Image 1 (cartoon, rainbow over the protein chains, first blue to last red):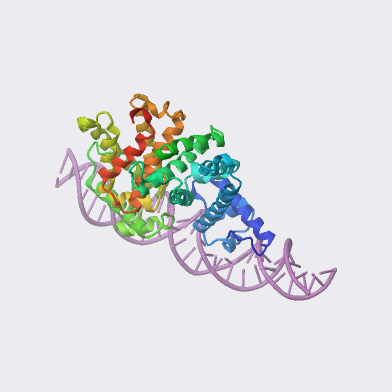
Image 2: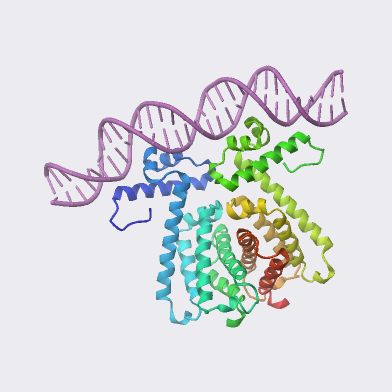
Length: 201
Length: 201
DNA sequence: GAAACTAATAGACACTTTGTTGCATAGTTA
DNA sequence: TAACTATGCAACAAAGTGTCTATTAGTTTC
């Protein structure tokens, strides 16, 4: 559902957009369990049958929306890899984090409801997987192999710890309606994270 | 639903136990969204109507089960406060963490499904709130006021960071079927956590 | 711009789930 | 034993689900 390759019918895009917005909108008011295809269709001003032309059921829709989210974020992280300022070359994860947090702030309505207020597991899960992948890659590049050795804490535990801390902090920051700027939050996260890496300290 | 004060009718206890077990059991096989009162009643070998005698609906049941869970954990943490060995007096949170993780290990079937495999938000949320409370108290007692000052990271961010890291690590440890002993995991967590507190390092 | 294609609408269908009722039965407590 | 109360049973209206067929409307291609 995240394909745009062979040019998609604008009606399809429009419908999916409407469904998506209606869903986010409904989530502001009611619990996920109480959301029905009926209500979504009504709010999106589409026919109920049309919903089934796009998604098997509500969990399927949620999953597809989560996939889109992850794809967007991956693009942002990739872009950040290239345009990263020289001064951050020794610590590129800071720049990536900042870009990610800025993106989340730009779409805070979306992320707040799916990640923070109602906590829909698949979103947190996907984001966590992405973060684990990111940190693991860094660790393997030995750019921060210290995560492993220096603290004598097993790699996997250190990675679980760091990834959960990153995402969790962002979630709470969202819940509190973003009391710090993305740049500041990214900086604090990198400070705390750096502490796990005595080598580079 | 966590009351046992004026001695509860054994039939009530039996029924709630059956419902609880049926629910955990069902969650091993199917997604939360697909679980119906019908199925729970069937698996629990009780009448569907009986379910409604105890819970308003499924979300209500989940919430009550989560409440019971938190109450149990609070008792464990309180007990740990008293019986904490003298040598850990300067760092009692380690002992508490170990007791908590041991408890989770003892009921791993329960916690794995509710916290790790299917991630039912209310459980993680409640546990997170408890952890935040715990860390905040420590911080206020100035026992580890360093969380605040030493790293120059704002208190709330440091607390979000630490709490998320704690719970997240335990969740991943559960997902991986507990590859370390509770004592070892608690030790590693305290090592990583201590790093946030340069004063005591 | 007309023709071919495809998405969305509308109404209807069998089916499941929900939450509630009144009444009968069985277990619990005093 | 008697009073009480939890559970079981049958049935109900209401709502939601997922699917079908036929029709309308928008998009793309030549």
